[in-house]
Length: 598
Image (cartoon, rainbow, N blue to C red; front, side, top):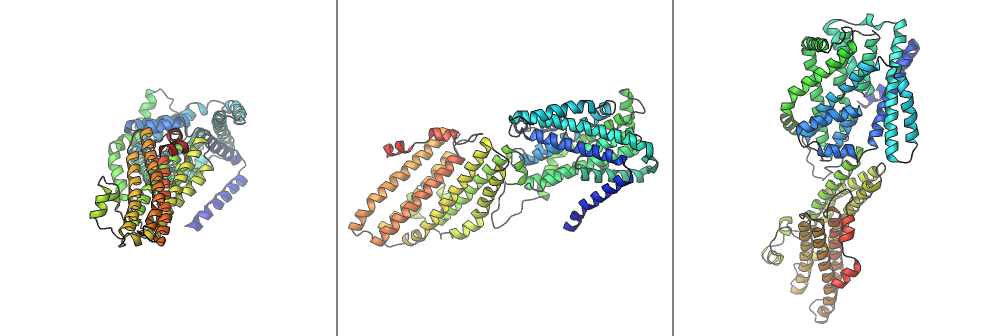
């Protein structure tokens, strides 16, 4: 399979070079296609520069109902004229958990219908108007705006330049086919009947996969039809093929997505395949409907370009009407067929390449993975010092739990770190590094905050690892004093984790911050109290000097672990907005206030 993939590009280049050598007029058509594709990429880049802004917020708040998701897909694809960009954004938001799978499917359905508006514009105006006259000013204004420092002006400039290149590409394709028709008439090579339809459907699929754009394929089809290089029937077949081939964009985008993104890509594939099959099986009924609509709209009988636009819209609309009632059934089917693999070694669950397409999606997946890392770390810490996680997070009295519950065997923290923590934390660090190559400003700063929170968690685990060795020895000692001292450290860590859980459940960031600051005060009081207590214990021979040395060292480990946990909690659980921790900096106690309070 890798060998086959490596051969595809050279074969395409060789065939393209042979076509150029065979007929020089093909160069102009190919240049038109290339300029059109470059226009799509430029337009997409322009809209990406508004990422983290209107488009993402609109997506986030406009998909809580299936009909709203469908409308979002129609409207945004109509405005952006790129179903590819909409598909990639939807996969990134779905992978980040910002929208549900049913909403994502609704958007994809709408995007298929929204992309027909481009066909209508080309069929109605693009073949009658000299688009190059409009393209040149757009390119000129666009380049001037791109050269500005303002990101907004740059984004508008890229959008204008993209539209200009689209217009220029359509112009060159049209001119190329007009010139080409004077020397060669491809329509004489067409194959009639059902066999010809299947052949041109396959040709439409392959061409769309190669160009990575159904829009380019449809424009190419319409311009070739207008130049009478293909028949109306062949153009219908190419339209069906382009619609089926466009799923490759979503499939490619899903390769770097998590399991939910892959489910959406499969849903897109199923929808387009079913829609294509319906249009093939009921082609005669569709043609009758196209004729009736054309007559009603008073479209000339020889205006096949507009009839192609009607046909394209009609079979997509029929597909949506038929499949929309079964969206929830499709969701359940995909969830059963595509299940998340279970592994012994914990791996990242939310991080995926698709989320890198949007700053908001990237920040969301890093937050969710960091929150998951916290949950995994708490389990490791709890088991490492002889607590069951459920007991540590319960409301039961810690002294009673220690007195009446036999301490379970402690977990090997090294092994737990390797299997539960290491891979997830490393993935977060690597993802943040990659994300910050393209994401700057507040989003980039917040990504680093979440990465630092993961570092604090790892630091806490390492401190508990150092604590564990002596704790497991002295917790079973016959010396009640040293046994109680180490149980105090166990209680201190449990208390801090309980306070963090309490803060985590708070809706008010200010209250959450106060809970964490109070826990931090208790840690400092414990540190001061233990330091003052150890010397009298040695003098009274309650503990040996060796025990005292271990206790002082392990107390520091325990306190440092608690501080690291609270630092993590302040980042993750004290209010989430576009600028987390700005609230925290205003609310948390400074060192002077902390000292005065002890």
